[in-house]
Structures are given as structure tokens and as C-alpha cells.
Length: 281
Image 1 (cartoon, rainbow, N blue to C red):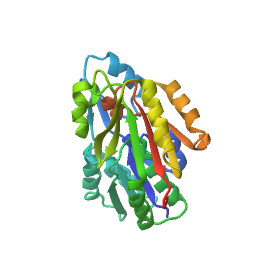
Image 2 (cartoon, rainbow, N blue to C red):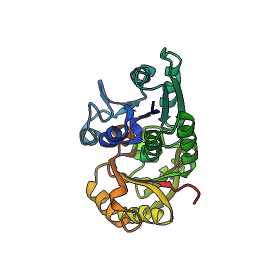
Image 3 (cartoon, helix red, strand yellow):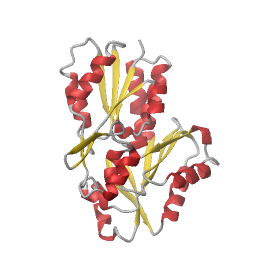
């Protein structure tokens, strides 16, 4: 029986990708006041960003309870005896702990391994996609888990922010704290380092930000996977994909929208590029 792959909605894997590769996605929750929505399930990304900029309530996010993972484990245990869970960074969310806790109450005879990716968004998504492809090709749990551990240091994400306001208000600013003093006049570029947000540079314009994202990818000569995602600017994402097609086949560039939970901290106008460096290069 093939290994089954589970991740969370902060992987920013689209439903089409998940269905095509047999990936189970456990959603986080975003709340506005008394209203709660499942990430990408009971609230679309478009609906979320509209509320983010128009609703008087500041959104709050919640990790999946262990019961959500228990349900996923029990369902998949009817189809396989090996499950691999790959979550977003434990330094950004308690999702990893929820997935671990859920293992203790699953009664089915199924081996379950949980890996903290130390990554988020499509930086996580590209790792999950690689794992799912290996599982579909017949790799067992040990081999797929080893692939994930080898892929983690090769996964790179950089993100352009129009403002740090949302990251600061949400308490996820991490090592980018030092940029706050100038957050109204700069366009920061952040990355994920050691599982948390970390500053790379600060720029003066959106155009410079898009150039930076392109040049980042251009710095790699051997790329296994590439993804472009946006919050509220699909046209900018289209243009960036066109530019990147000179470096990597356009038809292999994954496109996604930054999920509502990630968007709570990224804010409107954010753009991100994730890259999985080819192994051994």
C-alpha cells in the first residue's frame, strides 16, 4: 500500500494539486470576531482579503485541533498502513504539536510519522509535492521521510511585503523586528530561516521587489521545483511567471494564492517565490 501524505493548509497547495497527488490537507482556522472559517474551505482567498481590508475585526488564526488530525489518520488508515505528516514550522504555529498529539489516540494499526518542515507556504508545499510524487512512485515511509529531511535545507522561500503592519500585529514578526521602525517607508523582503521569519533586505518600491524575486531565482542554476504565489495581485504574479520562464519551464511553475491564514500576517499586496534546489547541485 502506498504511503499517504498529509500536510496543513499553510502549505498553500491548491485543491487541484492535492487531488492529483493524493495529498490530504488539514485546514487551519481564521476568525473575524465571532465568525470562524476553515482556511480555503469555508472561506475563499478572495473573500478573506476583502474582509481583511474592510472588516473592523482583526483576524485571528487557530491551529487545527488534534481531533482533525485523528479524523484524517483514521480515514487514511483504511487505505494504507503508512502515513507521513509534513507540517509548517513549529515556530510559527502549534500545528506540528497537534499532529503529534493525535498519534497517541489513533487506534488503527498504522505507522504515522510527523515531520516539522521548519517552512511555510509553498516553501513547504514544494517539499510536500516531492514527497507525494515519491510515494506515488512506490517509495516506502522511511524512504519518503528521508527524502523530506534531505529536501528541507534545499527549500527556499522569499516574500515581498507591502507593509510589515500585519506581521507585527499578528505577533509573527520574528527576527524582522528590527525593520519595524521604518515599516511605513520601505518594502521588506523576508525569508524563513531556522523556522521563523527573517529579514533579507528592504527596498523602496514594488518594482524593485519584483526584480529582487526574479534575481533570487536567477541565482540558482539547478532548480527542481519553483512556485509563485500572491495575495491580491494576480497580474503581478503573471508577469513574474513570464519573466521566470526564461529560467525555468513555465508549465512547471506552480501558481498559488497565499492562504487566508498566511495572509493574516502577510497582508494584501504580498508576493512570494519558493524554490526547491536540485539535490547534489
